[in-house]
Amino acid sequence: MEKISSRNDCFKDEINNEATDVPVDTDAIDSSSKIIDETSFCTKRNFCIVSFILVSLLGAAISGSIVLAKKATSTPSKTKNNLDTNSQNTIASDSESSSEDNVSSGDSVTLDETRRGTILSVLEPYFRSDDEPFPSSLLQAEAFDWISDEDTWTILSSSIAEKDVWLERYTTSILYFATEGKQWKDANLWLTDHNHCDWKGIECNKNGQIETIDLFYGSLSGMIPSELGMLTMMTSLALKHNQLSGTIPTEIGTLSGIETIDISYNNLTGMIPSELGKLIRLDSLELSHNSLSGTTPLELENLARAGTHVYLGRNFDIQDCNPSILICP
Picture (tube, rainbow, N blue to C red):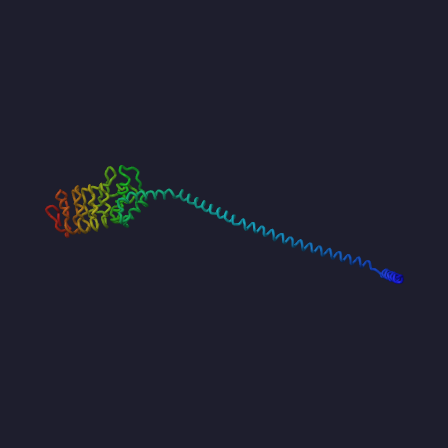
């Protein structure tokens, strides 16, 4: 045992001696340590830089997502607000434009509409029927449009009802259009803004109601309009020596106050209306020099017996004319 221990001690001493004898390059060791330290430092620094960049990018991505989410949340309300604002602005703009239009032209439009409505309310009860609205003919429409839209005359003062004034003005304009007024020899003041009582050939009573229409030798053509029957205060109708054609309107028989009718020297055709026999105040009925035909109405003979002068001369197709009471062909 002692031998073994001594051998071990000797072996240890040899080793220590060899280790002591081996030359150590301390500079190389220091250099290597420095390189290792610098490498570690560089590695750590690069890692830090890369880590910083990644963290920054991650933060930016998260921030961007948050911002986008907020924008996405807020955009609908902003869009809605913008739409509401735009709608309000549009409505306000339209309202302002409408107001400006009303200021510039609204008054005249209102007046025109009021005038048209007033005249329509006056005329409709007289001319509208269950079968036909008013106006029911091109002639009525033409006269109604003129008095409503073109005529500028207004009622300033009158002793008769407003409805009667509009009715008479409409009726006389119908006469103008029905008999080709533009071709008349003298249409002085017709269809102007003067009172219709001042129109050529028209005379009114002290109350402003039409009493006389005298348009003889006036170059009238066309037909006698039935609307003349609305002039209930008329006492004299003279349309002789013209080129009027067509039949005699039966509505003439409603002029209960008329005293003189002279429609001779025209081109009137058809039968003599029996309604004329109801005009008991009639003093003179001139129907001569036309192309009337048919049997003489009994009512007309009775009118003649009551003292009315009835002239039927130069109507060669009239039959059963009693020359003892009538002036026959």
